[in-house]
Image 1 (spheres, rainbow, N blue to C red):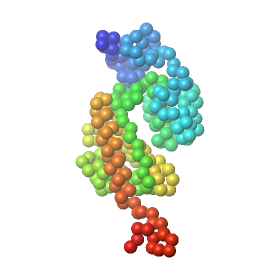
Image 2: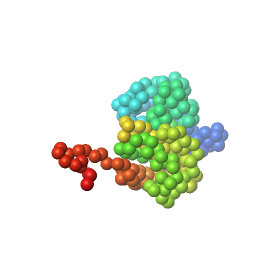
Image 3: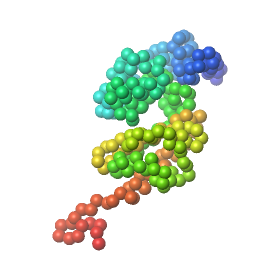
Image 4: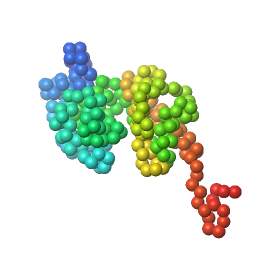
Length: 253
């Protein structure tokens, strides 16, 4: 559509001038001149701030979920981060602010940051502020967090559920997170969370993907691989043996 081409032309011109990422430059253009909103082909202009009632829909996580995990709903998070002018900060600095100042764990610090950026119009669902795409897949498995973390951190364990790929681990925080480079140069991050002594969750973020089509392929891929990981860990986990009244325990003999 001609209008979309005009908007992209303006955005790319600003990117060359300022060095901003695509989505940041686009937001600034729409904000600086509301008439440019007509070029966005129906996308709501950030010049008209969304109402608090729409925050959860835009963020992609319910108020109940974020409040249970962090103690604040989306309206409070937006207010708090606006006070710190987080809209002008890069993603990593917002996540650090959420984690360090508000004492939120790595997983939910990322979720709050992504949700805030979506609410402020800095990214679409599935897109990063650079204009690249990302996918998120998570899995809860009935094993201790130590076993789940080792399945990612140990090369021999990874080969069992990720047989045709060998990412390069860059950084890791024991039983909290792993950051690695995929074969194509994109970034894969895994965040771990204990949900009790015998249950834990992992969330995989694959970022820096060049298109929505590639993102859709990786979403299917990680869904299949996490399912394979769950099957592997559950098969290796010892069964709970419950005694039968007046006889041998079930599963024995």
